[in-house]
Length: 284
Image (cartoon, rainbow, N blue to C red; front, top):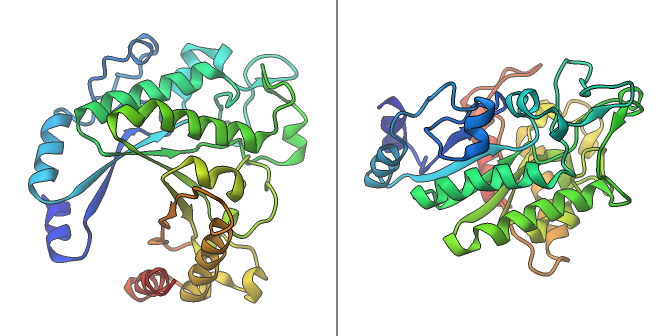
C-alpha cells in the first residue's frame, strides 16, 4: 500500500519484483522442477504473484521480474557440479565466503530461463537479469578458479551468449530482456574482469541497465577526485559514454540507468542528490 501511494504521488511508474534474489530463494510457488528439487521454494515471499500483477496493472504500474543469475547459494548447495570449482578441490568460495554458479554451464542458463518463462507467462512484460557476470575477485583468488566446460571462449562472449540465448527463448512470449551491468562498463574500454563489455552485450539485450552510482567510481574518474560529490556530472558523463558507444553497434538496445539512492561515503545522499542524477538522465 505504501509503495503504491508513493507511485501515485510521484513520477514512479515501474516496480521491480524479485523473482529470485541473491539468496537463491524463488519468491513464488514455482513449478520449475529444479527449484523444487534443491529447496529454492523454502521461502514463499509473494503468496499470490498473479494477484500482485493484476493489482499493479490496475494501478498503471509496469512490473519487471528481476532474476539473479550466478549468485545462488541454494542451487550451489543442491547441485555443486554447477558451481565454479576450486583448483584445490570442492566448490570455489571467494574472500567473502560467497559461492558462484558457473556462467559457462548451460544448465545454469536453462534454470534461470525456465523461471523467466514461467513468470513471463504469468504476465510480466520484462525480465531483468542481475549478477549476469563473473565474480569480481582479486587476481590472487582468480588463480584458484576453475570453470568446467570453459574451453577457449572469452568471458565477455559467454555473458553475451547467455543474454542472446535468453532473449531468443523468451521471444515467443513477447518478453523484453534487460540486464543490470556495472556502471564502469559504459566507460571502460576493456573487460574489467567480470565479462561485461559494452559492445559485446548491448546488441543482445533490449535494454542495458548500468549501475552508474557515483560512489562506485574511483578517484579521478571523469576528472573528479571525489566522484561521489558530483552526482549530476558523473551520471551525465557515464550515460553519454554509453550512448556514444551504442551508436556504433548495429541493433544496440536502449540504456536505462540505475541511480544511487543510498549513502556510501561523503557527502550524504538525500533528495537533491537523487534529483540531480534524474536530471542528468533527462539531459542526456
